Image (cartoon, rainbow, N blue to C red; front, side, top):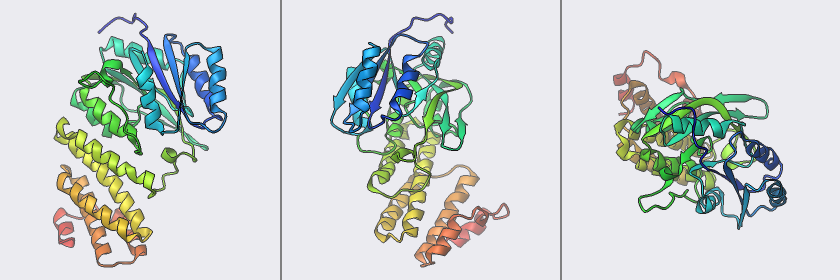
Length: 350
């Protein structure tokens, strides 16, 4: 382990900006006041139609570490990719323009990366809602090898690129080009992380909530928890299909965890489609779930029971049980009791 003294290598902080005029000052105030000075701040104006661009220009006049890129609206992934194209840092960090970071985030994270010879550092975060604030965290410490990928599916892991700082080399492909974010997907961070993390040898988790994630109700990715079925929201399925594929070589337990996440997403959307009586979408989702269950073979009893319970609920649908009844069963955890044996449940779905 290295000493606490370390060279302040350049950190590139990439911030996509799209119509966040109401929040950009808060964000940039937190970035420009970092206790770690050697940073470049790359603002990518993704075709804003409010006065976000003017506010970016104002900040750039006050701080020469700020660079502004302007492009036509292409979405979050396109904006991040544009930032990657011009960044010069030894380390790379992403930040959403409606969020903010703690004053010592960069300094502490870089220090931990250097001391532990890690490829990346991740920190705890605050979920900030209009009426409450919750802390999200994992156990602090060093994570090695496949456990880094497996941590993606652990409780408390933030499936985002934003509460992390990466060594530049980790983000490069074998050809020396940056691994880019996939455009047009919801949960694009999950796909990108599933490509990046298998390359990492060591990661450090810092249990200090440096990242402040503001849960805006007007943001597609930060909704109230309602299951969405619009075209954009449905790309979440495509995203986690890619995640599962990327995790296949990371080990049986990691692949199982990835398929479990995909199964849960499909199950939620299937129930929502059934309640909306969307027969076409229901059929498509049933086909996808059938394919996932060919790969997803739960190793523990609890997850096995969840799958069996789901199959029973799907059987109700096939028997034309009314939507109210189906919805009722889909919300009843007591359907599978502690006294229910695996064999009894299997008999119900034969």
